[in-house]
Image 1 (cartoon, one colour):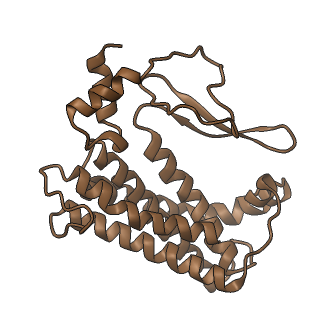
Image 2 (cartoon, rainbow, N blue to C red):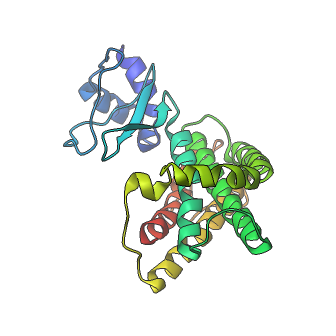
Length: 257
C-alpha cells in the first residue's frame, strides 16, 4: 500500500477529514498496513486498546460472546460500513430501551395504546438510524445528508411500519420462549430511578429530532451550527461536526435508560 493510498484512506475517515495534506502525510508515516487471514481474530472485547483499525479491503465480523459460550454475530463490517453498523445497532437498541423505560407490557400490538406506542418508538428509531448513516456518509464524502438521510428514513419507516407490528405479534412470543430477548442475552439489570428514566427519554427523543432537523437544515444551506461554521461546497465538516454534540445528547440519554 503506497503512501498516497494511505493518505487517501485517512482523508475519508471523519476523525481526519479536516486535516491538511501535510498533517495526513505525517499520520500516514506511523500507519502500518496489516493483513489478516480469514478466520483470524483481530481483537477481543476487553483487550487493551493500542491501535485504531481502518478497513481498506475485505470484511470483519463483529461478535459478542454470551455467558453460555455462544458467539452472537452482531454485524459484518467492510470499507465505509461503520456508520451503517452504528445506525442499525441503534435502530434495534432504541425501541428496546424506550419501550422498557416506558412500560412493562410486551411489545405486541394487541390494543390501540400498544400499537400507538410501537409506531412512535419505531419511527423515532428509524429517524435516529437515518441520521447516523446520513451524518457519517456525508462526513466522509459519500452522499449529502439531505438525500441519504431522507431515503434511509423513508425506507426504514415503510418497511418497519408495514411489517413490524405483524412480525412482533407472530415472532415475539416465540423469541421470548426461546430466551433470545435482549435481557436474556445480556443478562438482568437493575432498573434506574424513575427521574433518571424520564430525563433519558427526553434526551433521546429531543436529541434524535434535533439531530435530524439540524442535519437537513445544514445540508440544505439553511443553518450552520455556531461550533461548526464551515460553509464549504460539500458541507462535510459543517454536518459532521455540527451534529456531533446533538448525537452525543442521544447517547447520554441512552446511557441513562
